[in-house]
Length: 277
Image (tube, rainbow, N blue to C red; front, top):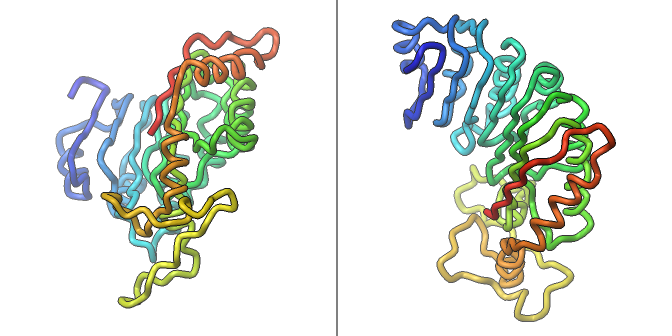
């Protein structure tokens, strides 16, 4: 640990670990904290209640993801919001893991005016960012220079393209990293299981829906070496392969969509990094 900086890669970053750290660490001088392992609710509550971080400028926080007790989900995210909004305004913020119920508007309203670096990395359960979400980032984070986002691909349709255009409204943005999610997570994961009660032992998962564009082969189930809550269909797998294709044409089109749409007087986009996931 360096002066003013702490990073932890502990597999179980829990309440006892925080208490131990506080015994020999002056939290009041910390400027950067990176918690790269999942943080549980009791740990987060303890940090929110007992840890003053007046010097903090940068934070990376990995939310509990699949480890959240589903019956206490709202409580967990309320504590997370409270913790983040009581911090001094940050220059760097990274939020990874499950953010499905996190009030990010409040968090960006609190920190946005000072943020220069922002990273938002969702879990498989999260819905993709909408054009409105990205527009709000540009509105609230007027000093933002470095942005890392995950966008869901949808075969290059209008919905997908609409997510690139608001990025040009971030006037000072110079470095942009985009992870393009190839798989439609709403199909196998919890968004598609509304009404399903996993507390019932013999409850069967609802059948994976078809897409109107699927032909006879596409509608067949794909079961070869693929682990998921529900079986994908051949068409879903094919779409995932198509969505994972990233070439120079896509990269250039994405760059010029963002760079070319910037208003006069904005900082030019200096670097765009694209990767598929």
